[in-house]
Length: 290
Ligand code: MF3
Ligand code: CO
Ligand code: CO
Image (cartoon, rainbow, N blue to C red; front, side, top):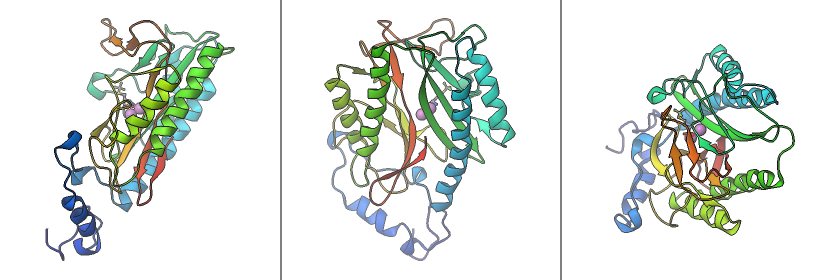
């Protein structure tokens, strides 16, 4: 790309006035090959208009999570929550990204107690006193994606469950605090893993976060327990999720044979997860979806 060409990011600005300097800085770094360090591809870097698009999707996604939370009550089945959220998202001209994603049959994921993630809403799953659940929603508005999840509780929950939920949220925030430009994606997992272990919890590593913005799932894979200074270089304009799955017991998980989606802890222990979509900025990061 020549200095006076329009920049590859689609901003409409000349390359020399847009991403030339960043490209030169990335190119000048001599890390490739060590600790799996790699340079980010252009396709996962957002311009200002892309960021606005993700933020518009995030407004609807936030409303969807608020609505879902307001419906969590003893005696409610999880399909009722799914259907209300589906109606909310579609009535705002957007699409619930989970629906049809690799054949996923419902619009959102609801993962109760020992279910780690990808729980399928069902008429048969009726919330009961003491349950803890993760509701994970992704909204696609005009080709921009916002992905976030939160924990909710039903009635009176145990002290152990309360502690797991709180610490898992702290672990996500520690991961987000470690996300900085010109550092590496592995710093996020290093921060999460350290805090999880310090609290006696295990981190699921079979699944992780992902680039998210101009598509639902993009590079890089975001591990929540890995070496600092490893993996993809983070640069301004990248958007990705931080979504640690934390188990009270062991880290191993199994997928239900019956539906090929539901991921559970192998030992039956409780699991919690929180998720935000963040943007790497010039100085640190900014939350796009929560
Ligand atoms: N929203 C989940 C994530 O955080 C992905 C769910 S994919 C589905 O990446 F197919 F299970 F819905
Ligand atoms: Co999600
Ligand atoms: Co995600």
